[in-house]
Length: 294
Image (cartoon, rainbow, N blue to C red; front, side, top):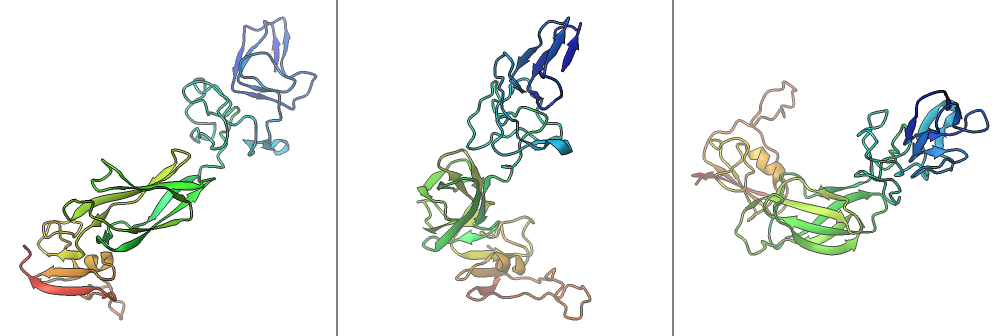
């Protein structure tokens, strides 16, 4: 950077590296540049500055993204950094890297690009599945996947849609699964809006399951019910038997109110695409019909 008879210049969160000349910043007839939180080859006085290879992905090819281990990661003045980098990527607090920057977002990266390799870091709860139902006394498997250096996880259950949480396991190895015998928690059934949360014990990283139910094992179907029900009471009944069968697990029952059901299934073997009214049963699931729906 060459300054000639210019006004005072401020440089923040920049990388000045690998250019021609003996120094990265040269002032001729200009006041010294005010440089802060920048990577400057040869060094420069100012808060947060450092002289270390920025570790670009491929400087010769003009790929100025950062590689893992770059000293520019989490080293910027977050208050001076825009919310996104030059490519539109959001700022990330890179796990395992001490925040060397400043400001409210002390983990922004120096340079044009925010390091993105840990965007996949996270916890995803895969079991229970959305809309499924668990019965007290049933042994189930809570399953998840975690990316990043997660060693142990905490498992919590909410029976009220995420308002309050109870601990199932304070700390258990991150082995992608945890066996749990379902309980009713001393509360009435059904509990229609349950969630499971799996969190990294050493971090705030967490994932939450989609809604599921803890109930008595019976799924309800009524063609006259309002749409959008979760199927665990007559008042919230499914409108189609196949919806209940899809949700049911071995040992569950499906109770169907008296009525006529035209299942929206294109199971016609001739491929006409017409509704056939057919259902596909599941092993270990019992279906009963003719109920009054109350």
